[in-house]
Amino acid sequence: MKTQTKLWAVVPAAGSGSRFSKTELKQYQYIQNRTVLEHTVNRLNALDLAGCVLAIGENDNFARTLSFDHKEKLHFCLGGVERVNSVLNALIYLSDIADENDWVLVHDAARPCVTRANLEQLVNSAIKHNQSAILAIPVRDTLKQVRVEHQIEKTVSRELLWQAQTPQIAKLKILKNALETALIDHMTITDEASALEYADFPVQVVQGRSDNIKITYPDDLELAQLILQSQICL
Image (cartoon, rainbow, N blue to C red; front, side):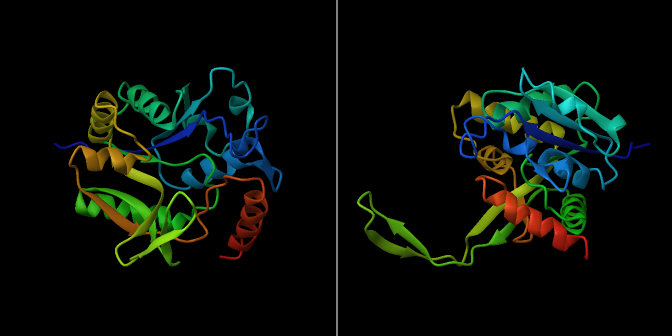
């Protein structure tokens, strides 16, 4: 009898957040009396997860003290120098407790506004088509290709362009192998989909929402607070 696959989540949370602040980590800033990381993980925990792995920094003594929902499902592992290393470390950790065909959602620590409906659409699409998938939104603005001197070279067609978001979902074995292959070949990995693409695995786009923002700069906190407040009414 075939065992039903489980759903896991991975949150790389070991980044330095240099674009946010040289001294503060964006995932530990507070919105509505909770850290960004708590909001993010609690959104994921709205799903029926088998567990959630947080890849944190070596000197991070704060993450384990936070009040996450379903804290019994949380696991912690050591993050890496770059995001891709943190994700791979989490997948290696998962390999000891999960089946290689289980699904894994990888989500940015600083995306606290993803909706449950979007999460469910992403997971359902991946399972239905048996294929890796990501949340993304069509590019809306006119795009310009610019030379070094800040002179416009040409207008780029946006017809086929989408802006990638997270979560991104794939089966454990497939994603782990794709990341390992890309790293061995010294490829630049900006997200999980880029590794899957390099390894010739198909990746489907599921339309996300523009309010699934990633907190990158300090003023993004104010926007995230407004979004979270508005979502209470949804």
